Length: 433
Image (tube, rainbow, N blue to C red; front, side, top):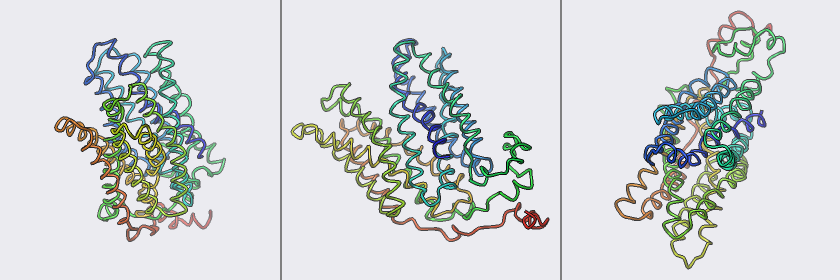
């Protein structure tokens, strides 16, 4: 299960997000679009990525994760193939909105749900391994797209990015990924008599499916929305992603502004992606062994230290040491984000984990959108990146501190009988099974 989902993630999130910049200049040259117009592609993708994450969580509480991943991968792949044939800005913006929606359905939220159900004792480590697959896609996809673009043009490159989503990631989701171990262990007679399209039905359609439906502990959505712990996690993800967006999208312009060549700045920027994978596995293992709260606080504080090191790079007497420190601290400890899905499960339970994870992810998407805008506004007002980057560092430290206040909500470990359980008990099916 872990290998299957990791392979799917390599071809989904990284190629969807990291190739955006590869296509900007070719599109400007061919169509004469402005930088602002081309940036609408990124905006539409990110907006739908956040909004559909909420829908993905809702669907995952009602349908099997494999089906959701397959649909999302197919939607993203079709978006890329269609974008390769576009000749107008509006059409391409719609295609990138489709890519963002498909990526949301197939990546973060399903990944967290599957990890929570399959690897409850090593939840954070499983998330770390899956994030490593995403980081590998982030690191390799731009190089692959650039190579195809140079040899065959941007249309061929977009198609080449989309086809693996359709023919590798989507089939893996459909035939290999399952929300729970119970779904994967359904007897062969059920699999032969109940085809894969029966997973479209949100209710059990057979006796074996009724019996195998797991009763998960935790709060319903309405109950979770009335707990302080849930809203703390929403605030943590908003602040954390605001800090990420503030620094991530402005790193290359900042490095160029302090004297680095554009090519050198791009190398520094890309080096972080190769460290995210090992960092995610490391932080996941530490969280499982040492606890989520100390891991979150230490990791976010060290990311803030990396931002401070980046600011120190303005002093050329320090040489390249501050930049190296920034790459190491940011690249490795950005993997701390694997702790948040674990804290959500620990504090709210897994009964409505998909929907709650979608809400938390949506908050992070809004934060990531606010961060770059805030830094840009402060840059216009002050002529310096320093205030914006300092604010980002403070956001990381604050989000880590808020994690200390997150505690399990009352009822997070309570298992409730569902309507299906009552039906089964009333007909005596559990006993006969």
